[in-house]
Image (cartoon, one colour):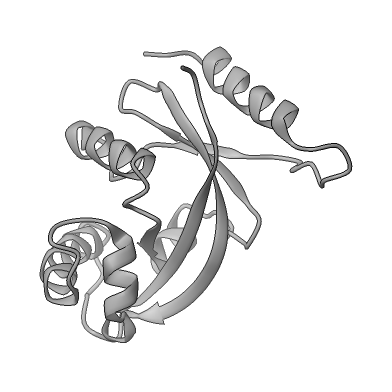
Length: 160
C-alpha cells in the first residue's frame, strides 16, 4: 500500500502549482471511489476521472450521519486514490446538492461517467447499489432517499 508520504507529496505539488495570490486550500481528504473492498471499481473509477469522463458522484445522505462526517462544500478538495493508496489526482468540488434519488436528471447521470451514461442506466445500477448500502445499515431505500450529489473538476494530476 502506498503510504501517506505519496499523498502528502501530491497535495504539496498541487499547492505549489497554485498561482501566486490565489487562495490556498487549508485541508483535503484522500479516498478511493466505491465502498471498502471494491478495489477493482475504485481503480476503474479513478481512471475514468483521470480521462475527464467522470465529473460527478453521489453518496447516501445517511452515510454522513452514520460516520459522522461533514458534507462536502463547494471548493473542498480531495485526493483521489487507487485501491493501493496511490494518489491519482486532486479534485475540487464545484457543486454540492442534496436531492432525492428520483430527482436525479439525465445531465447528472451523464456526468457520473459510468455505464452508458444514461439516466436509465444510472437509476438501475445506482438504485441497486444504494439499496444494498442502505440495507447493510438497516435502512430502507426508495425514490425519496436523499443523496448528496457532487460535481467536481480535476485541479491537479499526481505523479507523472
